Image (cartoon, rainbow, N blue to C red; front, side, top):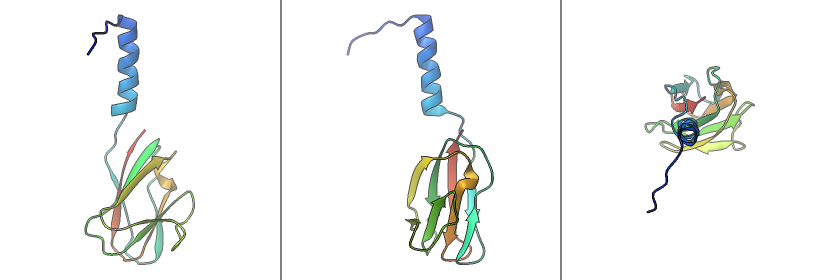
Amino acid sequence: MPVVFLTKAQLAILTAIQSDMVIGSMQTCITITHANPDTNQAGASIVAKRACIKAHPANTGIVWVEFGAAAVDLECYPLNANESFSGPIANTDEINCLFKVGGEKVTVSFSN
């Protein structure tokens, strides 16, 4: 592997890029849940750039997920227990979940 020498300015730029891309400003996860089945629930309002949404491993039903509008059966992204996906968002309140079984939940980890 070749050895690369960087100036202090180049090293500072590389460090800033890595910090923003890899570490970012990670927040504690939020949980989205609802006691009643077939009810849409939005996440709490927190500014974010990207989110990872994961269905709780103990869930027994499908959670339908939508961004920016209420989640609807068979028309949104389905998550079974322990499944996850991620994507860009502007705020965690854009995440809407329709729980087919009351009391189940998803966790959302995000960076801003």
